Image 1 (cartoon, rainbow, N blue to C red):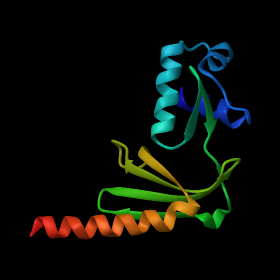
Image 2 (image 1 turned 180 degrees about the horizontal axis):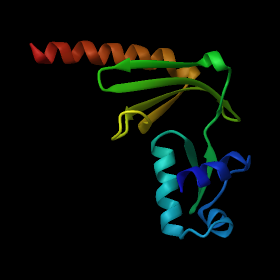
Image 3 (image 1 turned 45 degrees about the vertical axis):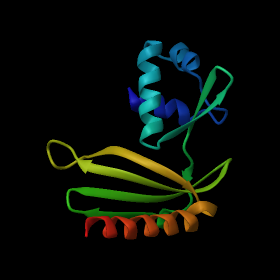
Amino acid sequence: MQQIVLELLKNSKRGVTVSQVAAQTRFSRPTISKHLDILVAIGEAYKIERGNLAIYYKNGEVVHPDAVQRVALDEKTYVLYRLKNDDGDFVYIQECEPDEYGSNVHVKGGVTIRMRDLPTMISKLQTFSKGLGEIEH
């Protein structure tokens, strides 16, 4: 289901609404809303609300094949992407973990940060982590 919705998002530069997806598929509006919200939560899509209308867009395209990096830490893998879309340049950090068979990867979540905001975010994370160290002692 998510792959079908994601494919519709890829093919629509102007975004899609729940009603538009429902008209193109056999899925119910509540099911479509749920899967669109999941795609937003894991960073594969983003949503812009205009009044009571929500328009969903595919998150940006990877800027360059070298703009992807995997970072494996214990049971989790983080995949870093540099994305570009009509709203600008972004870093997308995707949290992944192995499926029940230990091979395929499930996306658990993600966060998208504007490139121009990245230095501030890194600084805030460093300050935050230092503060946590002081709390533990």
